[in-house]
Length: 135
Image 1 (cartoon, one colour):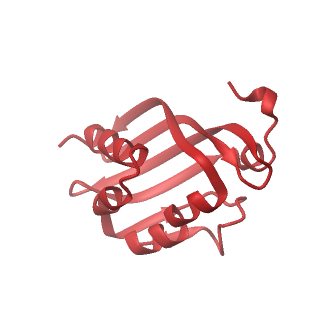
Image 2 (cartoon, rainbow, N blue to C red):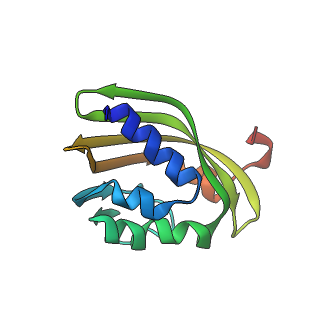
Image 3 (cartoon, one colour):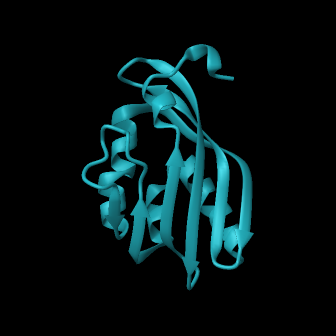
């Protein structure tokens, strides 16, 4: 499977709520760098392995967001790297306001498994959205 197809499959599984399917795509030694600035991120925002990613990230999403989704604008591939440029959309439960925030993901793939993840996202827009900006 091409790396770009792996990414498309992972994002599709996530959009359908198939978190177990996404976790099965993650290498057992995954290093996941979640963006600081969100209240559920503890410590330095680095999670190691699928179980830690599920507990520290995926399980927190429904606690803090309603209708959370990732809108992919572009997927790019270069050797073992994948880059997703797009947006996070949803409603921040603390304020009940909808948001659309810039997001970038950089993935590393090894042996057809997702082995490293780095995220950059506009956390200020998520936590304190201005509803007029939501499109």
